[in-house]
Length: 226
Image 1 (cartoon, one colour):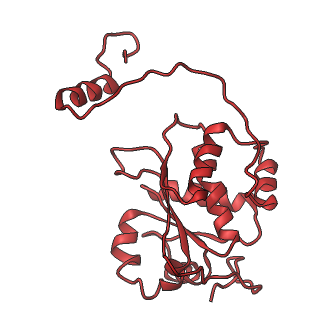
Image 2 (cartoon, rainbow, N blue to C red; image 1 turned 30 degrees about the horizontal axis):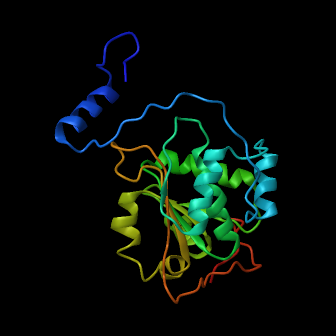
């Protein structure tokens, strides 16, 4: 791990040295760069989702995206760590949006409000019928927060908002949480220590998803879950 233009003094090298001194670093492996490998869409992905991504310019997923999506779809916890702009979002959007179309809900935790706003715009731009994405954060007006509570099946928020507002009021958000199947976090360790998205399927033995999208429409363009 050599810092460009100098000896082993880069941030990554310092982290590795600290890990080696503490005895917590068990293995280091350097993998040579290689060309991306495209693979077919998973068979379980609904046609409307793959068509939306194709229309957005994604002809097929990369192998690392499909591998992450497969783990999450099977119900496994999964973390993906790849360079910036390598398409990590598709890895969790495939299983998450699939879950939404089957009547479940998705909770997405973003470290910042700006990232949550970017993600909700990306989801809305796909234009998938039956997916109602909404952001609930400190800037969300009360009326918009209420519409998100009653209509959204893909909710984006921040860790602080989840712990200080949504969970303390879990009775009001009970229908959303009862149907939750996936929770995705852009930075699962902390906002300053990790950058890898993670997905964790919600597990509720003996409890089936209860939220179903109805035909009615609201000002947000989403059907009411109630």
